[in-house]
Amino acid sequence: MNKEALHATVVAASILSAILVFVAVYNWHGSSIGIAPVAEGKKSDSSTVSTASTDKTQTLGTTAAAASSSSSSNTIQLSTKEESPGVYRWIGSSGGTINPTLKVSANTANIIKIQNPTDTKHELIIDTGADVLPSSDDINPDSSGQLSFKPTMTGTFTYHCAYHPFTMKGTVQVVSGP
Image (cartoon, rainbow, N blue to C red; front, side, top):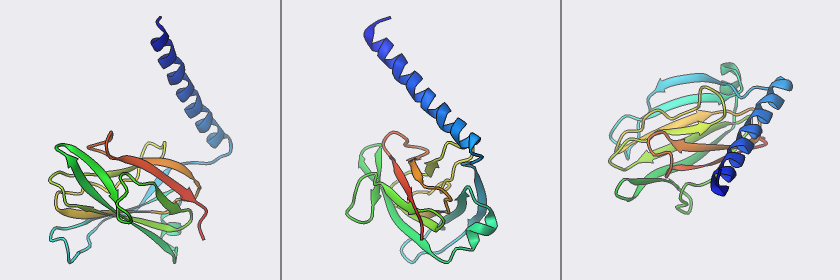
């Protein structure tokens, strides 16, 4: 086995070990990263976009009743952009940051609103390590959508586009809520 192959094997084994330890610790403490749908298919209108919007509300580790009882919320604006033919990125509304770190609050209703002025569909997915991931559903060209969720734990997760996972990806930081 050559040196590069050995290095790749060690890295892969280390990553898998870290994942297994994380899962074992969470299960040992009785915690869960499960996701329960709260509401789906609610349409909203927008004066700047003529097509229907998708609004999918989900929660990370809470029940539907707990997610709907929050009085405070955190809203993040994202857009999509085609940098070069076939290369798409998420763009933050404040400062135009490419694939920005999304800071959300635990125990708070968080809403990610997404504008898609490009010629292809996108879908924002938050990677939680669970079988079911929170997503925005498809956001069609020249349309908008949103993802609403209420995490009950802090931590760092990743997000990506279902259709462009290598160029449209970033980090979600869940910090202590109000």
